[in-house]
Amino acid sequence: MRVVSLLPAATEIVAALGAAGWLVGVSHECDYPPLVRALPRVTGTALDPALPSGAIDRAMAAAQRSGVAPIQIDVGLLRRLAPDLIIGQSLCDVCAIGATELERAVAALDRRPSVVTLHAHDLARVLTDIQRVGEALGLTDEADELVAGLRYRLRKLSHYASMPRRPRVLVLEWLDPPYVAGHWVPELVAAAGGVDVGNRPGARSAARSWRELVALAPDAVVIACCGFDVARAQGEYESVTDRDARALFAGRVEFLDGNAYTSRPGPRLVDAAEWLAALIHR
Image (cartoon, rainbow, N blue to C red; front, side, top):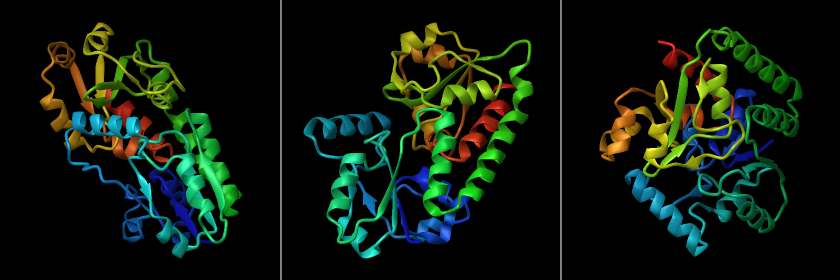
């Protein structure tokens, strides 16, 4: 089977199911496992990822206002790759090719491939999406085994949830402007034995003022910037000068690789829960 993945989480799911060798094309952001970095890039963006987070946010907002998709798909390359299956998403048009753009691309192909569209907002649906991908690949047993293993690892963290005092945790996925992480992240915090004070399970990530955030009085702030590794997130953190933000950061601040662990609705979300447990209880 020839598979094209249009988002990093899908690429990771395919690889975790033992089918990395079936991938013939991936998105411009796919980087894990490392072997996929050599594959053709089916998507691209004119946005410079090295820009400060504030500039990235403004550029994305401008693209949305203009109706121009911030990420483009190379239909010619997609046609040459002749996939049997394309895995896309409909969760965020900013981070990856959206459902509408994917439909247009598929309509332009000479041969219509099967399409699986991922749309998980919470942890249960992430696990369901893993099983859906497994079914599409004909790897149902492998998907069931993978999901069972992920559930087992989450259960192993349950002793943290029974602790007499659970830390109040605020997870930020963007710093300019500040965004509180949502979707599956509050569940990861809960699995790690914390209480997410910024958002609720399944809710979209949301912009909040620094004044609102400091009023939450968290025991720990975890900075896990979407698309950024720890070094990049630390650089963004150091550039924040807002008075309320510095008051918030005067307490305990931890960093987690948001690009690898919290932003991708795939198998490594369980790694994120394990990392969070280590961070907030140390």
